[in-house]
Amino acid sequence: MSALLSVKNMTHYFGGLRAVHNYNLNIAPQQITGLIGPNGAGKTTIFNLITGVYTPAQGSITLENENIKGLETNEIAAKGLGRTFQNLALWRHMNVLDHVKMAHYSQLTYGLFGSFFNTPTCRREETRVEENSYKLLELFDIKQHANQMVTNLPYGAQRRVEMARAMATNPKVLFLDEPTAGMTPDELVQMIKIIRQVHRDFKVAIFLIEHRMKFVMDLCQYIQTLVFGELIAEGPPEEIQNNPEVIEAYLGKEDLT
Image (tube, rainbow, N blue to C red):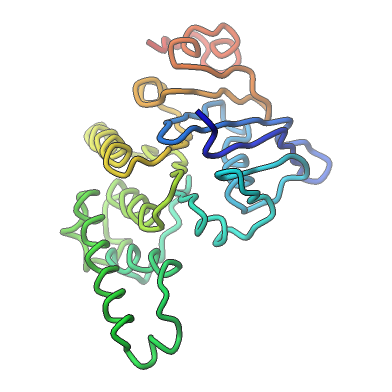
């Protein structure tokens, strides 16, 4: 199957320090891929390079065979890369519903004229946005919080708000940067169910960074292991969990089964 998202020979430097070296990635439609590695390995940097926060010094990035390297983050999002962040990137003075509604606006067509004069097209599209936003809130089990300020929610619920916002952009590939970080065991179980439902219902490819190995091994179809900005292993979970380089460089004596 041809790749939906392809990264070839991506290399990047911060000053004189090489942060990522000769990184390659191919994600097929609807594939769930995990990226693991110790702290400081460069995982979030790779997310930032692909999604346009940084522009790689070398290499290519294509989405559905279209070059996206060097585009602005909003342009890349509009083309089909949705994203959450390791540190929550939510607006403090906006309620939950408005977070999700705001993410739809790159898809609207009525323009300034339609907004100013409240045209029929404007009313139809705004109704569609609100209906779809409520559907996403229901999917992520946060509909009951729709009118609450997002900072008043528990941490796990805030994570789900961020995921709902990312899905509102109608992504082809959803990037999840440590989606279970800081969650309780009950919240972790709920998040696993939500990710599986999103994958099933939206038929979206998922690329995730996660430290909880059992979560990665259970959820992902393909896993890459990164150390000091370079891949040391990649393959299906059963290969990665038994790979001596992975165990030695990242996991020590931890049992991955």
